[in-house]
Length: 291
Image (tube, rainbow, N blue to C red; front, side, top):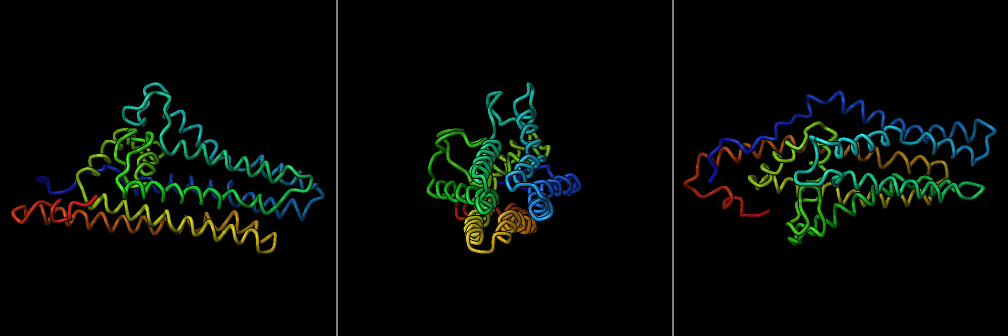
C-alpha cells in the first residue's frame, strides 16, 4: 500500500555538480582522446622521431586523468571509515565500477603493448582501445540484462547485489557506484537508490530500458568502429578509433539525461495518481507487477 505522495527520494541532483562533471569529462577527452590523435599527427609527420618513439611518447602521456581517478576511487572505497563503500562489503572490496575500470586498463595496456612490440608499430591495432572498451561495456550490459530478464541469480557480488541474490538491471550498479563514489553521494545514496528501486515499478522499468538503450547500441557502434579501423585509410582509422566511440557516448549521455528527467516526472505523476486512487487497486497491480 502506497501512503506517501511521492516515491522515496534519491536526494541527489546533477544540476549542483554540472561544473565539476563538465571539467572532469573535458580533461578525460583531452588526455584520452584528443591528445593521442594530436600527438600522432604532430610527431609522426612533423618530427624525425622513429615511429616507435612516437607511440612511446603517446603511451606515456595517455589517460592521466583516468589513471588518477582510478586510484582516488580505490582510496575512497578502501580507506578506513569510507563513506562510499558498498553496504556490507569488506574494507578492501572494490565496487562493480572499480572492477570494470581495472578490466579497462588491462585491455588498453595489452593492446598498446601488442601494437608497439614490432619495430614498426601497428597503427590500426593501436586505434582499437576505445572501441574494444565499448564492445566489452555493451556485451557486459547485454549479458547481465538477459540474466535479469530471466531472473537468474548473481554468480558473484555486483556492488549492492550480493552473490546468489536476484540481479537488477545492468545499468543499476554503474549508476549506484558512479554517483556514490565519483559523484559524492556516498553509501547513503546506495541505500536511497535501493529504496527507490524496491518501491517503484516504473523506476525499475526505466532502468531496464536504459540498460538496453546503452547495451545494444554500444555493441553496434563498437563493431562499426572496428570495421572502419581495419578498412579505411590508416590515418582516418586512427582518428575514428579514438574519437568515434567517445563522441557517440557523449551524445548518448546527453540523450539519457533528457530521457531520465522526463521519465522521473512521469514516475511522480503516476505515483501521485495511484496514491489518490488506492481503491482502484495497488500501484503494483496497475503496473502489472513487472520487474
